Length: 224
Image 1 (cartoon, one colour):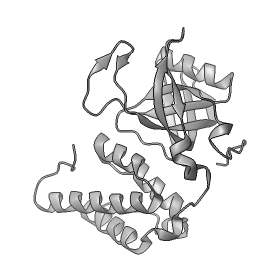
Image 2: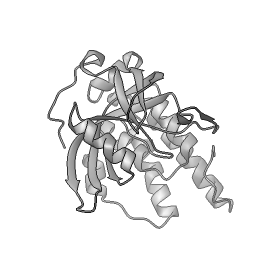
Image 3: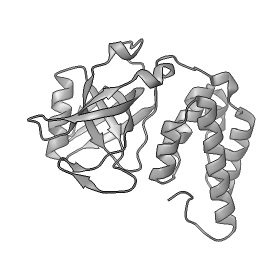
Image 4: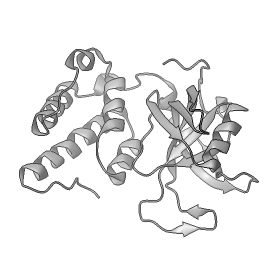
C-alpha cells in the first residue's frame, strides 16, 4: 500500500512521537505491519495519531529487561510507521496497518499527560531509509532464496514462489525479516543492520543457524 504522504528525509518527520513497545515485533521501512489495538492506552494512542500526522513508533522492550519510572526500559532503536489503513471492530478495538517510514534513535522520553509513552527521537543516522531500494543491488539474492527454500523444506512449509521471485530485493529482504519466526535479539539485530545487504546477510546467517540447530535436535532459535 502506498503512503499518501511522501517523506523525503528526517526533517519531514516530527521530533516527538508516540511509542508502541512490542516484544519480538519488527517494522522496517516500507514494510507493512498489521496491528490489533485493544488496550485502552493504545486506543488513545491511535486516536492521538489520527488527530495528527498518523505516526507511531514501534520498538521493543529492552532486551536485558529492567524497568524505569515510565515502565519497562526500551531499546533505543525503533522504526516509525504511518497509519495507512484502519478499521473499527465495533467493540472498541482498532485494526490497522502501519507502513514503515524510517528508523529512529530514542534521545529521551518526554513527560506527557497521555496514557501512552512518547519520546524525542532522531532519524539522522538512518538517512538511507527514506530512499526506496537503497543498496538493493548489493543483496545476495541467490543465497537468500536458497536459504529460504531450505528453511521452508525443513519445516514443511509452502510459499508463493511466483510472488517471491517477482519481489524487488528491498521488499523481499524486509518482508522476510519482519515475518521470520526468530526471537527479540534476532529481530533487533535485523532492525539495526547498517544496510540492506547486511540485513540480508544476517537473515541468511540466522536462518542457517536455526536450520543447523533443528537438524541437531535443538528447536531453540539462536541468540535468545
